[in-house]
Image 1 (cartoon, rainbow, N blue to C red):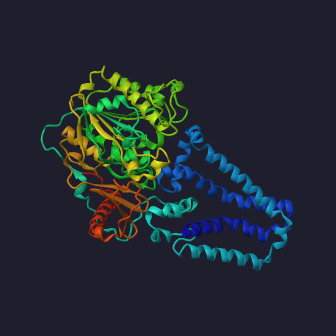
Image 2: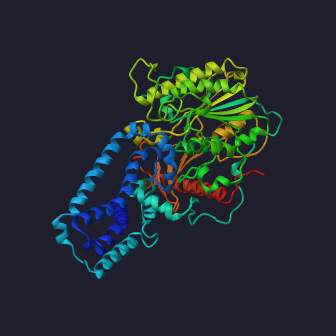
Image 3: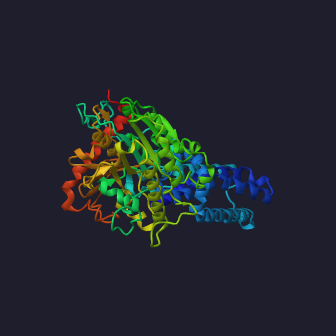
Length: 583
């Protein structure tokens, strides 16, 4: 709280400089009314954007789990496309924010034009205003810890990474990313800058024979699904009769953690099999020019036709750019669907229209093919067709209704696919793009938030095959290539779940790395590699009992520190030194 006050004060002082200069230099030569208006505008114009950005983060943080930086500017266009959904989700925030701004502006104006304010002014001489501005600049420099003028950085090393978003100010993080000038990964002092070799840990090859089974593949990315909505006997279980029937013929990885927290990170984790920098989507970062051979190129070289389908705007959130990077040949969006009457008014075409449409479109592709299908309707604000009746006999929460509706849309997709000649020779891979806080309770439940569904269906699978190995999104691609018997080497931060030994899973965040191993979750501060948190995350799902100072668990800390150090250094070198291509 004290650091939050320091950062807030630094930002307010910084943004008040234009007003203070005006008030001390020009104000005395204007009428009270004109001076009051000018002063009010000079005070509010810098303050309002900072206020609005912090207001945005009140709603956006629960999705991104980070304070906004300059990358928020790239969300303006998608945000305008989704404006009705934003109003539907956050009308209370927008209304209260505008109301607060109105009364705040009125209060400032009344105060600046009041006789009391005029009588209380002092230090009006040139020496006076120079003194005041100088003192403020000195204050800001002091608060910044002499490291980054105007942007305090001391909290980065004095506060637990998990608590940083509470201490930071959104305009401060925005300024910091702007002053930084680029999106290159920050290199901590402990990272070996000279190591330029690609780590052999990221080069995979599972088959050395001609057993490559050129089955078709459809990857279905489930928007905002968490594992509990599909888990039998879970209180949050949604009515999903179709998927329930499918599970009897699936390989289910029932211990899967999401590496990502947003769709533009999740698609990189799943289809790229590597982590996106947390500050900005990979395909908007300086690393987007790195040389790599994505899944589209890998399977395209083996005769696969490839496509991506999503019922949203063309290049929704930059997905089309990323598909091109991966070598995906065809992109199907709502323009190809061509019926605006079937759109939800927020994201795009309702799933129960678009998914069967894609099943028909697949008939035009040569076999074998790789298709990526991304659904929309399970994204907040959970807008469903007005004629949707539901499938549950009991009343469900809005997010559960949305999951049930997606289940219905998938049933229509499969019904259409079964009529085709490609269905019986196709792997259908289901995986969520990220978890989500569906309600206030799940917002506090870390384990629920990062636990996602990951399962594979094939018409020739006759039994339910559970796999309890700890898995992650990066593992999808190598697991799939292992199933197919792909005979060549490829680059991946993940591992085939079928071959994992001593599995470890990671969440890369702004200032920390979360490491999962066995029943433990450790949090490593990226500034100094200190293990600042240790939890038994499955039984302590809200991460309330930090074991890091418990002597019983002291021997575990060096192991997690070493795991985190090795992984981050290898990731840094792969990104910064353009070592993501297997030659």
